[in-house]
Image (cartoon, rainbow, N blue to C red; front, side):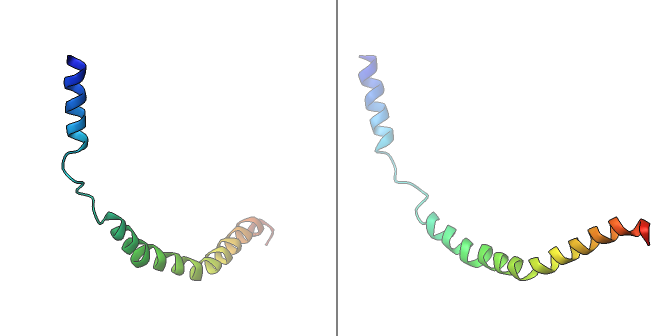
Length: 67
């Protein structure tokens, strides 16, 4: 008896209200195109300069005792 009552309650929960998350995938798409893509483009543009400056800093830190 108890199992059948629990099974009916579970089935009702399953068929309950529709999800409130409709449209979330489109928001993710807008987030990627509007925020993440420009950030990646900026990083691709500035990354060579950052790597060059980091290399120069390491060279200075290693070579300054010999100057």
